[in-house]
Length: 93
Image 1 (tube, helix red, strand yellow):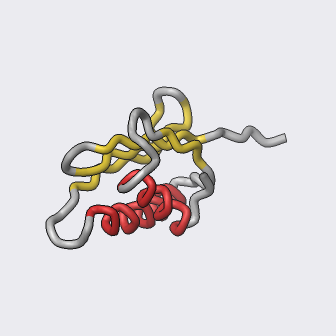
Image 2 (cartoon, helix red, strand yellow):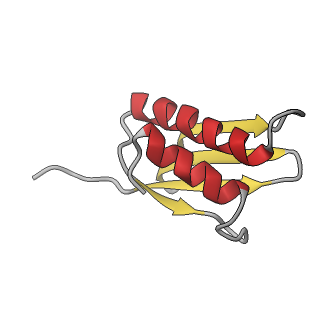
């Protein structure tokens, strides 16, 4: 019988970007990243791309599925686009 860890992905949206981290144990951060939105393409499109890239980074660390915690943010706009990018990248939410 193998020990399955349910990873938690916490996302925080600021005015300038997204702060994302994946936790295995309560205080052990497995993967973390900050993405600052650039002028040009829409922030929603950038969030999708960041989600795909972050999913690949997490999969390299052995994370296959996560519980998505969005905090006080609504599941809308950049948060929703980031989650879509994670799914495209191969993470199971």
